[in-house]
Structures are given as structure tokens and as C-alpha cells.
Length: 302
Length: 118
Image (cartoon, rainbow over all chains, first blue to last red; front, top):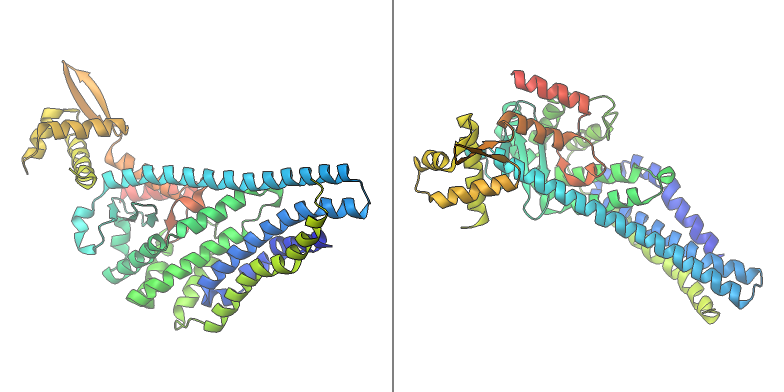
């Protein structure tokens, strides 16, 4: 029974929940709690899969009344499969982290050499780099020596207040280490076998992190400059219709819509989402795994 | 000398090489930089060696003197940085964070071409 229930939980979390959760709008008013919820959904799905792998052989061999050698062989097989799953996740995480770091290091070196910030010291932050070029471009290079990069085009399209809004938004990504969250979701995405992969959690978390940065920037400079910056930059950059990850402009619309409304953090939604996140991690363990472990250890075949 | 100061010097040396438009010797770079401030010849040599190691400049042996030239013009390097910033890779979601979405490679090429004309 344990294996079946864990399997059902794992499938629900990885196949049924993500779609509606990504489309839900309550998350827009509680983005921090929503990110926590996505993290616990993902982690809980992984733990469920591991739980199935470990408990199924024991349950099947016991139901079939197999002898001790068969049970032992089944358990060893299960441990190997569980080990492979964990190893695959770890290798993926190490790979994503290493490649991202290398790319950022090279990118940081180039923007440092090309920097025109001498002419824009009045804009403030030491880690700001300004590139030549009329193409409006604003992004940040995370890491231990982070950079915020603006192209000259941004300075031409936006006024000072709007530039401050963009800078506050990017500095939030850097200070809150959002790249660590994105790295872990990217690593999980890449570790899942190709036919089963889904970009839904990755894109949803990405949008939520943008919202978190928007909220901090809004508190610093107000919603209006941020809204204007977002509108002007997306209009100025000819985003291709088919360009991922926002083919319909839905993410942009959601960010703009919540900036148009007065900023109210919903305590109720935050608490509910936080409880759900904690419950997802704790409850399956307590209700399913602990009793099973108790029984299984009595019959440990090795 | 701290890393920060070396980083600033690297940028200034690149600027001199880009402005010159022809390969320069260490002495020539040193002369150009010394117009504005006091700088040791050996420091300039160190910086040029560091840039060569990073494959940002090439070292050419001409008339028994080493001359240095940038591997790309400033415009080319800027374009390649923007291309790197905006194009897709397997880990694109993790590496950099953008204020607005990314471009498709075709749209980006068009946008860079357009921004060069203006």
C-alpha cells in the first residue's frame, strides 16, 4: 500500500499540480511563499519516487511470499536504483552550477573590459557596467562578484527614475541569490528523462522570482517608474513571437497587472502556501514512510 | 595592488589598444597611459600579459619588439557579449537574469544590426 500511495502522491505532484499552480493568480500576491511551495512540491516528488523504489520490492516480495534470498536481491536492486536517481540529480546540479559559473566568469570579464560606466558614475552602484549600443538591454551577472549590466540603449529609452527601478530590480536578484534557486530547478529539469520533462515549474518559478524583485524595486522607487520601464523596454526590444520562455507575453502581462494594483502582501495566502509547503514535506514522511519503515525493519532481509 | 585596480587597468589598456587601431608595443601603451598618471612600465607589461592569457589581445613579434593588438574591435566584442547575454544555451535559465525576456537568435541579429546603424 505504501508504495502505491507514494506513487500516487509523486505522480500527482509532478503531473497534476504544476499546470493549475502555474496558472493560478493567487501566487502573484504571495510570490515568496509560492516559490517555497514549488520547491517543496519538487522535493516531495523526488522523495516520493525514491520511496516507491525502496518500498515496492519489499511489498511485492512479501505479498508474493517470496523467500529471503529473493527479498534480499529485490532490496539490493532497489537500493541501486535509488542510488542512480540521487546520483543523476547530484551530477546534474554540479554540471549546471559549473557551466553557469564558467559562463558568468567569462561574461563578467568581457563586460568589465567594455565598461563605459566612467561616464555614468552618477547612476550609483559600483557593480554597474554600461555597454555601448542602442539595443536596450538590462540584466545581471550573478555570483560572488556580481554585475548589473545596462546597454546605452536603456539609458536613452528610460529616464533616471526608471533606470533606478531597473537597477533596484536587478540588485534584488543578486542580493537574494535568485540564481541558486534557478540553478536547482534547471538541474532538476535536466535530470528528469527527456520524455517526462516539463518546463512548467522552471518558467513558473522564474516568473515568481521576477515578481519578488519587482516588489522590492517597487518599495524603493514606486510602482509607476518600474511599470514604465517594463513597458518601454519590452516595446523597444523586438521580442520574437516564438521566443521562449514567454511566447504569449503572459509573464509580462502578469507583472504589469500586479504593478497596476496597490501592493498588498496577502498574509493569509502566504501562511497557507507556507503551511502547504511544509505539509508536503513532512506529512507523507510521517503518515506513510515512518510506519512502513517500522514494519520493514522488522523483516530486514540483509 | 588589488584585483580591482588591475581590472580597471585592463580596461584602460584595452581602450588604448582599441583607440590606436594598430598593434602597440608595451612602451607605446605605457607612454599613452602615462600622459594621465604615473605608472610603472612593468605594470603595463603585466597587464598586457594577463590580457594575452585571457585571449583578449594577441602578441605579435615584429622587428624584435612584441606588439599587442586586441583580438576583436570594441564593436565586435560588444556584439558578442550581447549575443552571449541573449542567446539560448542549455543552462540559459540559470546563468544570467534578465529584466525582460530573451530574444530569438534571428531577432537578436537583426536588433544588433539595427543598433549598429544608429
